[in-house]
Image (cartoon, one colour):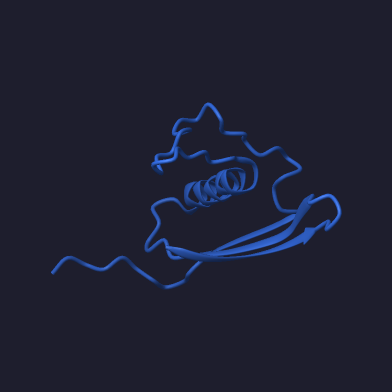
Amino acid sequence: QGVGCVEVEVDCLTGEIEICRADVLMDQGTPLNPEIDLGQIEGGFVMALGYFLSEEVLWTSDLRQINLGTWEYKPPAVHDIPIVLNIEFLAKTPNPSPQ
């Protein structure tokens, strides 16, 4: 679980956006390997950017999604990711022990 905040600049004339900064705070519990967790969070964040900013989700008249696969997915390029991407883990939050 986590929370994020993103600062963007939008060109009102062209609709072009620039993601200036993103801050993400994640509760990972007790990580086995924090470097792997960091890579997973970065990858998931950038993949979500591609989904929200470049994909067109199409629906039928009876509200079924037409494009369900990855064929229409446009992966973000290097210029689509935030200029500053800060990711932190919530400290001292161990996983709960089974009772």
